[in-house]
Image 1 (cartoon, helix red, strand yellow):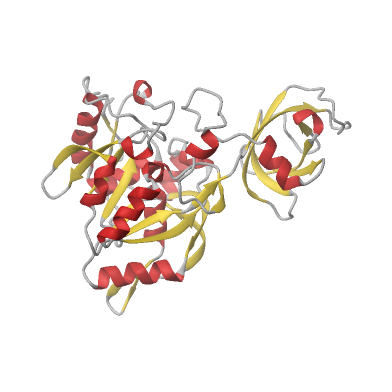
Image 2 (tube, rainbow, N blue to C red; image 1 turned 135 degrees about the horizontal axis):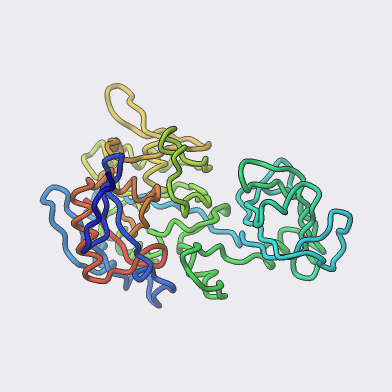
Length: 368
């Protein structure tokens, strides 16, 4: 029997007991606000099952002295490359085939290689070449990976890193229905981004300005960072294999010793850990360990496949700042687990009625 959709909100009970909602395309923000901190903020209180409509700048008073705010300082690379296919025997600068797109995911086994998502994958097979920017950059498909993944060796006129930076586009999510502009290079990036490697922004962090961060530090809030290079899987609906295996596509992370020390010191004195974004939350929960009867985080670097979904517990994170997520995606599953499905349904209903802006360039929630 098919689950009945709520006609007011579009939410539908899922087979796994969670909740999802209908088509949110009318609410998806297609461009960022001029002022990052001018976004709206839905403050969701789990203890009272109530919420308030606020502004994101209010976070400077909602986070308390002695708390610890954790940021994901990954930096988005211009990962999207649009070119033309060349016949397997022709690697010259004159395109002779159809359109081709490569999305750089992570470096390959040598400095000039990258694992990429390829489109159309059926035509981008080993031996095919792709020309970009009239031949100033050429990609040679050398191996085939899972699904649409391809190992590509790049050659460039001049410096390869400079060409990849110049030719590549900002990898805006597919639900933003426009081409990237030069302004997106700055706005689809957090103000604290440091370590290159992401193909998607940790979007909860897009709301922060340097003034907001300075105000939090002045208030007595510890601000610390970790890195998770967000992959393309963040856009994709949760696959049946992910649900069955309880694993997401692997993403590289680093949790430095200084951040682990700040977190453990905060929890030791009774402060709260506030994760900025679901990516930050996944790293913190990946690095949780019980030592001497206490839950702590340990400094680590590696790949995480952690898939948090109802009814999974959270051992480290006390509060979560996040955006409004699309149905059937892994970030929404994590937020359902953190907030509780029934409460989240009611809060999302209120946000939809109030016309909150959805997804990457949209508004924010603080769940506490």
